[in-house]
Amino acid sequence: MSNNIEVKEIRNRNYDEIIKVFKNLSHESLRLRFGARINIEDYVKNLIESAYAIYGIYVNGELVGIGESYLLENNNDTVEIAIEIEDRYQGKGLGTLLLNYMINDLKSKGVKKVITYVAVDNCKCLKLIEKFKPQSKTFRHSYGMYYIEFDLSNISEVKRTQVEKVNEIA
Ligand SMILES: CC(C)(COP(=O)(O)OP(=O)(O)OC[C@H]1O[C@@H](n2cnc3c(N)ncnc32)[C@H](O)[C@@H]1OP(=O)(O)O)[C@@H](O)C(=O)NCCC(=O)NCCS
Image (cartoon, rainbow, N blue to C red; front, side):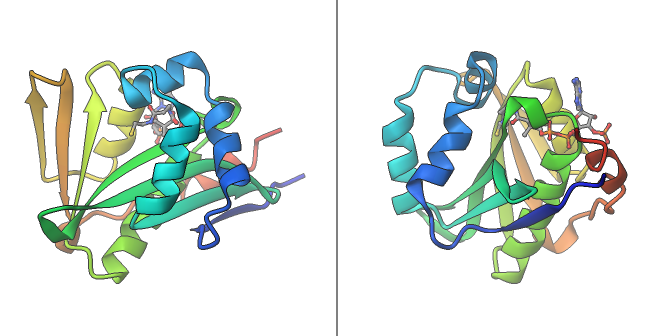
């Protein structure tokens, strides 16, 4: 049976629904995403209050992944993004669908540039990002992370080839 996959902006920013995704992340996923231990409750409250747009990916109506975007303080047309997919749904194409949707939606909102930081050992995320052919990728020694930039006027869209893979989710 095929699964119903939906990606959309989470306009109601429901705390309980969003925090469920973060609480379902393994220690390894949290380490790759944040680098250090964080207080998840405080993090999600801040996300809800200060994000530019929050995106969700749903499998059969259940929120299983979050896309975050934040306007940079000194720059109104650049956003920093981050993504997290619950562990049991990783590696099935959902991250690709979510990032593709985010990039297109941010572009339609007038955002010109997207930036992100990715830990050097986050192979899955780096492979995901490379699929969208970023304009620059610089190693920041002080953070142990890559700093990656996308110019949205010149972004390559990954076609929805992932859908077949996603439909194999049990
Ligand atoms: C990084 C993350 C968002 C990627 O989402 P995902 O749904 O797992 O990604 P996808 O299934 O779309 O896979 C994207 C690419 O990653 C690579 N990949 C997938 N699974 C992999 C694995 N087990 N090992 C190595 N590479 C893998 C593949 O190249 C894949 O592209 P392909 O299917 O075209 O070959 C997700 O793994 C995650 O939430 N990780 C923990 C939090 C995190 O690290 N967030 C990113 C920091 S901002």
